[in-house]
Structure formats: C-alpha cells, structure tokens
Image (cartoon, rainbow, N blue to C red; front, side, top):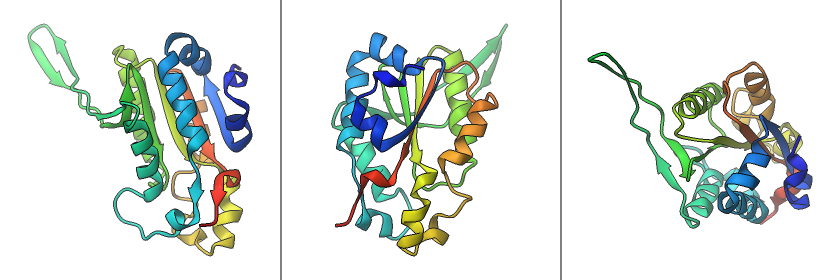
Length: 195
C-alpha cells in the first residue's frame, strides 16, 4: 500500500483505504491534484455547529469540502456518455460527480443513504473504463465518529443506514468500483471542533 505517501496529519486524522495504487498514481501522475487533496483534507475541521445544523439539501459539511475544492479549480461535472454500435446510439448517462479536476473525481458522502455508494462506485467504474477518470476518491464518515454522534444526541439522525465507512468498504472489496483505482477517507473524531 502506498498510503504512507500521504502526509502524517492525514494518516493520523482520517481513516484511509486505497485500492489499485491510487496514492502512487495521484502523487506521481497528478501532483497538482494530489497537493489539492492533501491541502483540503489538512485544512478541514468537523465543526459541531455543522453537525447539528438541520438537514435538507447539501449539508454544511459537504458544502465546506466542496467549496475548498472549488477554490482550487475543481468543478462539479456531469459526463455525457453514450455507446455506439454500428449506427445504433445508446445513451449511457452517469450521475454528476461532486468535484473533478484533470481526470480525478471526488465524491463527498456525508449523510446520504448508503446506496449512494453503489451509484458512486458504478460511476467511477464506468468513467474509468471510458478513460474519463484515472482515480476515484470518496470522503465519508468513519465509523469511529459514532461515539461523538451519540454524545451529541444525534445518532438517530445519522444512524446506520447512512453513508459510513463500514458500509463503503464491503462494496469496494466486492468489486463495486471495477478496475478504477480508488482512495477513500473517513472523517474521524480527531477533526471534531466544538464551536
């Protein structure tokens, strides 16, 4: 595993997993995007006020990560894909990706229902096979955050049926991302800030 290429702060404050040498590909072939990812993760903090904010729409946590990537030139992107066999054209729509830059795709899954992981991984698989992306990245909650959620009295809001690392790993290990190199980061209680 090439996780050791990541800065120590990230390895100590996030739960990190990789498949198919994602870190080596990022650091070697996409150094600018690698630096962006490391900077965004280094600067991110999990504010209590953001966790406690009412639901509906994109969470303040997802918004803060999105905006940090956008400030570095990453864009939300909907890929237009289709399959052509002889003269027959078949639309093959993909779901839009939260943040994309130079063939690197990032999805932020803070508190969606866990089937969103299937959608993300299928998207990564298809886009990688079509040579539209080289690495897929998912940022989500580490299971280690459960204690913090319980202490804040909001465990029921986030519950087990939402996006947690424990729901993601079996999907990736079961081949959900196909041949796409994947890097995942779980936000842990080490990043929690009482504000």
